[in-house]
Length: 263
Ligand SMILES: Nc1ncnc2c1ncn2[C@@H]1O[C@H](COP(=O)(O)OP(=O)(O)OP(=O)(O)O)[C@@H](O)[C@H]1O
Image (tube, rainbow, N blue to C red; front, side, top):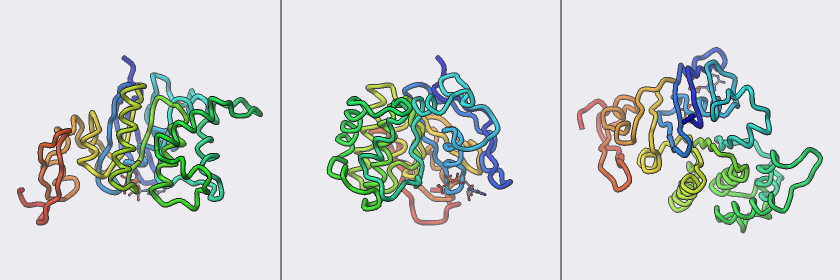
């Protein structure tokens, strides 16, 4: 089967600095892969390049097609991205912003259809955002805004979702709600998910596979149990941790003390 995302030798330089260094990865259709790694490892940069948002070397295919061959509308129908701190028109209303996700389906000079509006209503309801529909974006809290960004991406109806720290501003309840929603869409519609997350236990609960990035390179990959080991985390995060068997995957707990000491 063709991978939903296939990346070979992805290399990104920013201002002459090598940030992503020869990354290979595949994400199968319907699979959830989460990229982890310490601050500055190159996770966001890799995700932006895979989303076609950054110039890069190497090959990126979505469903077997090189991304350079896809036009803007085709790209937007294939892949939706939620990046950190997107630039938004501050005075724009929540409803109109979320409706922007339907842009690839609206003919040039045409208007949104009733079904476009129905998709927006459905997504706003699923993310508990109905009470905010009439508000300006610049009046929302950080967590409310983060859910609105996800809502805009979900209204795109794309088969691939790229999520860069999608729950970093959310309280534990909304965090779970958002991740469960994405997981349900994955189960029901075969959504493919490539995410980055800092909360390692939560990342491991939802991902089928994980990729540990450090210094722009893949240093470990496999199931959460294979990647979230005390040795991997000590080496690449310089932290002392305990990894405990949880109901849905390994649970990682940081422990005070010398990062180089044996746990
Ligand atoms: N325009 C730029 N010029 C030079 N270096 C840059 C530029 N933009 C980003 N970087 C550097 O690239 C590295 C990777 O950044 P990136 O945002 O991809 O890391 P990350 O793994 O997502 O980190 P975090 O966990 O902190 O979000 C960082 O060291 C960052 O300072």
